[in-house]
Image 1 (cartoon, rainbow, N blue to C red):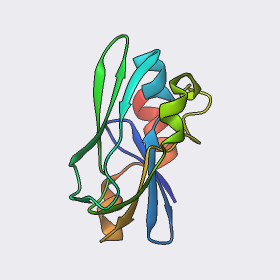
Image 2 (image 1 turned 135 degrees about the horizontal axis):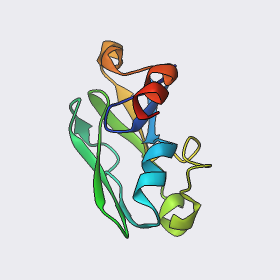
Image 3 (image 1 turned 135 degrees about the vertical axis):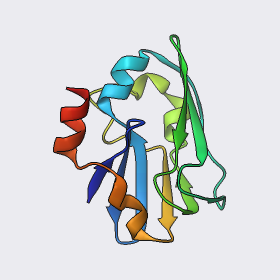
Length: 120
């Protein structure tokens, strides 16, 4: 299941693990990424908590958790090559993975068609 937030994060659920990244639209709006701060593995978060930060030459953006749960993994490979974060690769470049406590937290997010219409 793939869902999108109004804040331009995407969430891909696989069993109880949710991969979270930012949408191609968000990457396009940010421009060149110059800094990424990822959460600590093991951190317990609530839905809507600020868990990561992405800074570009234009702005800094907080990344919010789409659901309550525990951070299980972070994508440290992104930190080695920030230029790999492009609109074309945005859907593969997850930032963190989260073991979610309640799958219904994702119910309020948009499906891909609704998200595309909202940024269209």
